[in-house]
Length: 351
Image 1 (spheres, rainbow, N blue to C red):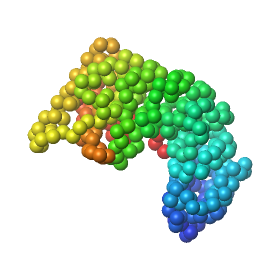
Image 2: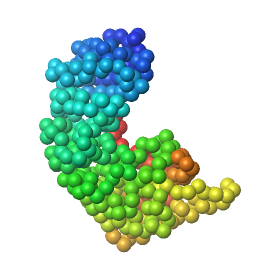
Image 3: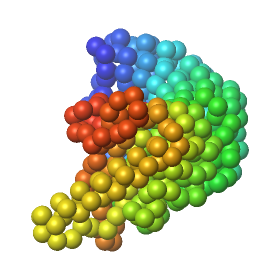
Image 4: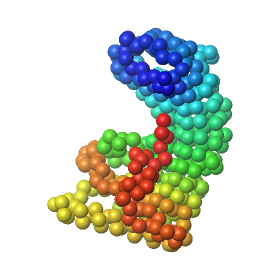
């Protein structure tokens, strides 16, 4: 058995042995209580010490009204450990869980891949570096901006692949801190709400922040970014592509998410509008490539979302471009032409 998935309430019995992947979902009041969860975790540790991947989802609907001390005690216990753990994914929206994971993190220094959406590692959100003993081998990280900065600003971790969720908090200060991450090669500035077709007017990176981001991470080979409404405008495209390609001279794969007003008219008119937008992106991209003598770029993708008031978006179109030959020119392509085009997130953590 390679994997065990647990969210079956009081009927749960952990009799699985030798599993390598543990997924524990605590989402509803009917799921195991904190005391039962503690027993489950101890039983899994005993029966399957070779866990290499651990996924934990903790919802406020599960633990908001319950005493969580039994669950916390397991995480704090120095003997609770998965010695082979390499990949960890935690989603926890219980505010009172601040600080409960640090001891567990410190006992698992071999973690290389981390997806963490939980109580901030720095409760004051001051962007200060965290304990240098945390995640010394970390190479791939998905988290909110404060935790990304806290983990990356000291240059103690060899982070190569970074995905920051919630782009409205990307600012100059955060990127001054992240210039310390000399190992960074793949960067995604993303908003998970877009996957649920939800919209907030704060979503997206502004033009000045885009310049700061690309200057701070000059060695990127993969870059994905959600642009805000103003930066998504057709008239701004030459500046957008110019900023990206002039600062990222090693860039091989680019993906932009743009936000625009709905395309109006009948089916033929909407198609013409899509084709026109695709042409504008292609032209602006080609001009920037030539202007900055950029050769490494192999693929580019544009995801066009239209904003439906007041708080919804939908994916209107996707444009794909690939390098035609060694001269660096890009041509219009199909989604099936390259594996990069089929991914939900270009550089996201796949665990």
